[in-house]
Length: 153
Image: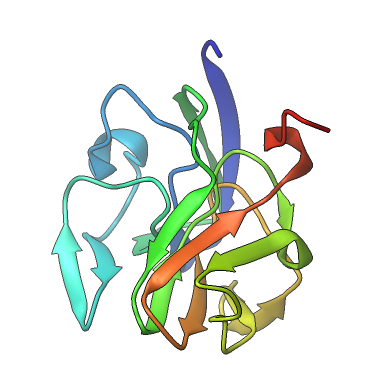
């Protein structure tokens, strides 16, 4: 699929970010060199991490609004694993409407999707490079069924 670039717009202060493509180096400080804090993932609690994973969301702080360009290859999956309860997730390279998201097992989504831009807000779309909170009633998989990934259409 070749090398692609996605610009991620960041706000001053804390952001929830994600890595929408597979980069040659997935270290947080390489992907987001201007980060002013460690990167925090969420499982049953917050955990400081240095290497980031596709499909997950991370808290990180920046000084000043800015745009960071992520370079990498497109990811050949549309699946994001989730645990029962709250999950911090990130989409892949395609903006996706939440109406296109399905789950295995079915109907485990039990909250709205929440984004963070200096405060929480319910979102109807997931944007590449951003991270989102979602609550599920069971452990399973979110399937981001964007039309661009469905080769049979």
